Image 1 (spheres, rainbow, N blue to C red):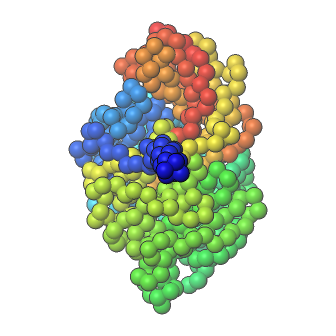
Image 2: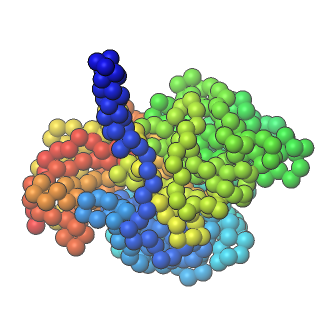
Image 3: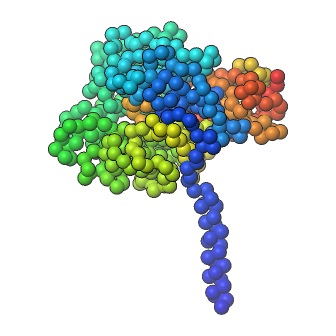
Length: 505
């Protein structure tokens, strides 16, 4: 009897120990007020709000978190529309170091497939859009890849050629890079390729080629200082879809997203639309500059035109489906070794990955949208970050007192995080490798954002390098509260330790 009681006590203890783990399991959260429009790509503005395109239109909406920083209890409001005649689908986009958001090209425009060369830039300071002229000589941009380079320059590709262009943010003019100057050595067309920023202040940009021979495994790195591409070696397993496993007929050239993890490895996903073969994956080690084969995507799925996102614990949330454009969609976490089964969002299917979009929120959760529908979820992961991954604010490198309407500087390390955040590839970009400033009022516990701009760098994983950003204290109408408070710098959902600050009128 005593032995039985001991066993019961042990079982009860194990159950009690398991309860916190169950309570902390990953979950999908629906929005308290879902959008009343069909969503598209989302971008994180530097004042903490999220701008979301109304799919296939020139309209944009703003999602503002509540005063506890919760986006699922946030509110929607109308933003200005893009200039008349520009309503793209599948396009390049980024938030620039000065806080403006840029949208370029589109595989479709106003519902017509034309690989448009139109573009527009949104200024949050004036709440207006401005037309962008295309790079000189470009008749198309299309579903292009883009990236903000470590020095803050926005680089845009021509979807269907071996050329790119750099934007001067002051004059809003372009410098065209060609195979003869600035874009030397590119192996193949940019078509269907995505860009992954590598670690460090002088980092390169990694891409996996999609237009080689039938069984090509080429990858390349772009060095912006040299203006040239060089080989990054073989991906070991083919990641782009040539349909080599089923005779090579009608290749889609599609590929999956590639996400840099905090340990310095890039997890690259593949597309294989043959019904009997799964999409492959590969892992690039930035320390050794070598690729290794990763696990195949489960259930014969692949990641053709699919989103993925870094999570605070370094895992990668990735969407998959059984071939390009096919249902059902299945989401997994990749933990560095294997795919982990997770709960699926209620109401997702029938669906496929092409319309899916992800965005890392300041909370560390991931906004998951399904373009062309009003469906939006928030993924709350189970794991958390390591202390070494946090941004740090150096002592005395921030204002003790700040005033509404004032502009201030905060300095420290790792303000841009260890990765770009979420990825898709050529059809959508929503990187969040820039610092956000969030302030919490001590008396009320309410949270509100300042607006950051003029970040000292856009490089990621910069270690002990000094970094900084300017920030503006917004009006009371934006949620600002007066009094003793704490402030954190957030990068890709990971906050610094708080410092004391007082907000005054």
